[in-house]
Image 1 (cartoon, rainbow, N blue to C red):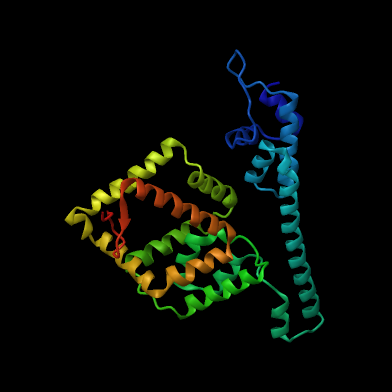
Image 2: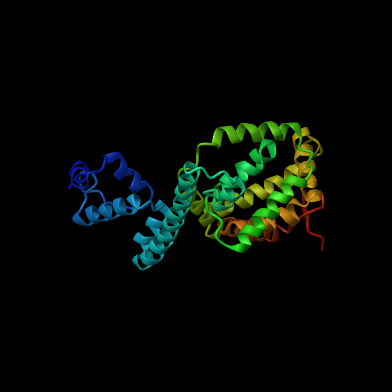
Length: 299
């Protein structure tokens, strides 16, 4: 079969079929004429993909199922839990609306019945302004989940308390960049989980080419920092001062550890990032000094 015939059979666009091929969900070989040749097996796979997508499953989860059918039950249970949480949230919202229509006016009690749908929604409400914009730009992908454990709830309140009481002196240039980035990315939530999975896979299992590129980037940074002009460029000074300000404020000791408790995906990402950074620095015999500059490790 050609792609047009398959598209008609599975009620899907040719563009969608090609997209699933690009994402690694469908492997199709080319015939002698150079065109892709589709089989009945490809039709079944596309039908499975449609079922999973209509259930709301992420592409990354579908890819894992197609690569290893034994994980299907696990992925379906995970999806079932997410849908159950969503249904419970909607049920509480409907109940609250009914109470309000019936004349309920104890807003303190009504508020206790409701939770934000995601941690991201809660934090965006609790941390307005430039700090909230900076926070959400960096951490939004890891917060598209509800609070389901007491540890998460405690971590959430610790983070809110941190941002509510900490006074940070953010350089003007970084304020402008944070505002611009938050504006550019505020609607880019779709596909977040897939991007996270790809990013984590790159850190956990980098191919030789990618690892060599990361190692080269660290070495380039070390060499650039040795030049006087580079070290004292306004942008370099601003970045180092900001990192030292974060360290002084407790960002690294209070905020980030609680972020790990709040978001399992962030915890996995941060630990993978540290691991590969430590590996590269060890191979290059480098360490970070108190000014967050790369230097040769003392013998």
